[in-house]
Length: 84
Image (cartoon, rainbow, N blue to C red; front, side, top):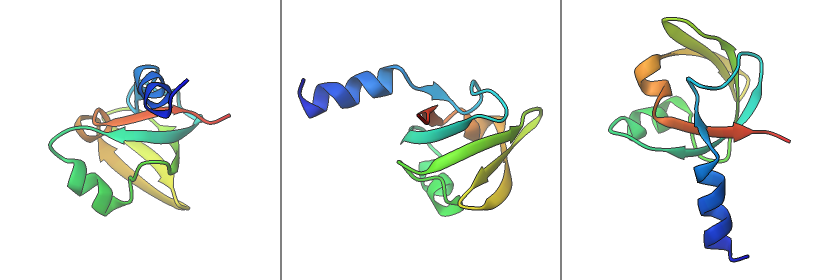
């Protein structure tokens, strides 16, 4: 299987950070949307691990040892897949 095809399949099976379950460790696969640069400034970069700590009006995530809250709108632009 080619690398491009494998990457496409990983992205197809990805979910948004909004869809991820609370407490799950996820790997960021792709930032897709108008706020991508802002997300990168906050530390959300492809291939990093993120844990969704709480859902609700805003999501609380742990990334690189730091907890931060992001809006559901921003979380919709973060495509993740389960670690493991």
